[in-house]
Image (cartoon, rainbow over all chains, first blue to last red; front, side, top):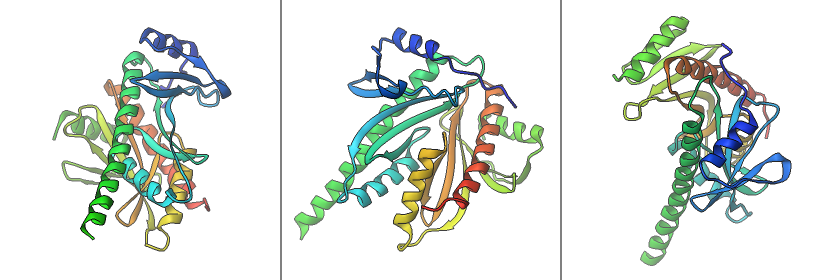
Length: 143
Length: 126
């Protein structure tokens, strides 16, 4: 079944601008913009033009001290959130949303959905971290 | 059973996928030599989760290594997430759709990708 369509970069960029976002071209042909105070990337991929991709880059730094803890938090976040995925790229936590485009979809609706999902996933990620930290602090107080 | 569930049932029947179980909440199908569980969301119309057990047991000893592998593959494979749930590794694909044709497209894409993802997991060393 080949109903997938090529997502034209120009169309996506135009839609983002119509939604009020200022795009800045950065390295690798990505476009940086800010939504609700959060830096996001529109990530065009010439190899898979049928796939629309947005990301929140470099959300959290992974160190040798927090790596194990963050691996569990990332796994929990991935289990609890819909659509978006949380992963580590080059010692940084990223949130990525990928969508296989379909013909005649409401692109503006899809973009809005992607960005709101990324923001919700970011909140879920930090809520989980805060939950674990609060638990540790509570245990420390009790000891 | 909501409208989305009935729609997914209908698509599966038309595509003639082999249904292993249908309990009114989860549809389990055998597709490309793998077992896939399809869960249309009751609360969120137009939202569907499809997950595929990878068949690797997670223990305290191998958990860190498997999480690393899950991260590597989640990064590599578009749309698919690899997670540990309890003591199992799962690959999952979540999608929403705006109409019936898109539901069919997204479901078929998810099943194809999950089958490929399982094979990739089996053939990947960290």
